[in-house]
Image (tube, rainbow, N blue to C red; front, side):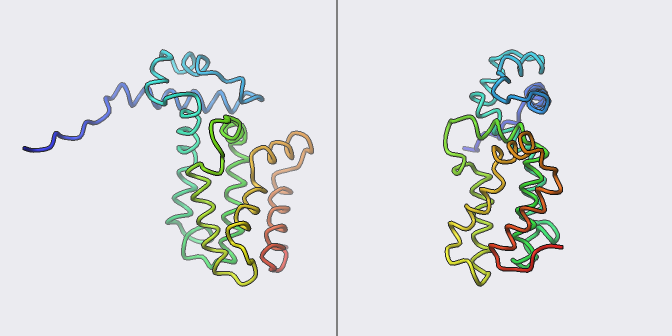
Amino acid sequence: MEAAPERRPRKDATRNREAVLAAADDLFARREQPESVTMADIAAAAGVGKATLFRGFGDRTGLIRALYEARLEPVRRAIEEGAPPLGPATPPLQRVPALLDAVLCFKLDNRHLALALEETGDDSPYGARHYERWHSTLRALLERIPGPTDSHFTAHALLAATRADLVEHLVTREHTTRERMRGQLAAFTAKVLDTPPPE
């Protein structure tokens, strides 16, 4: 007996999903307080019923996670299969700071969304799929660099400098510019790797 052909999502379901992600993206970008964005707000902005959101994403955390992963996809591709300095052909001493800079820039460009995901309280941010990818990639690179004795912890420590709540604090409370933040992270990374500081 032949297996039933795989069902493709209906066109209206695909349109609804795209509309919901676009509406959520816009709301999180415009609201200063991520927690103020509700499922009702997103449904109204997308022109769909709340039931559509819950069927498609499960809950608010599932929706935020789906949007975050969609926005992160170009960065993921650049890290996993792209050209230097992010891609896998890059020597570890150049790739580690490039990866951290890419993560920081992503957080800066999507800081309200990233903060919303970290603030969901649903589970540990360290168990998120994107975090595990970053951590495992960094750890593998650090194991190829003489110096750091605990690549597992060092990878966590380096990624901690890019947390969304820290980025939000530096931007809103300390008024740190994007370029200064990138320079500070590059200098910190160089110190951890025991390489010359960036110019």
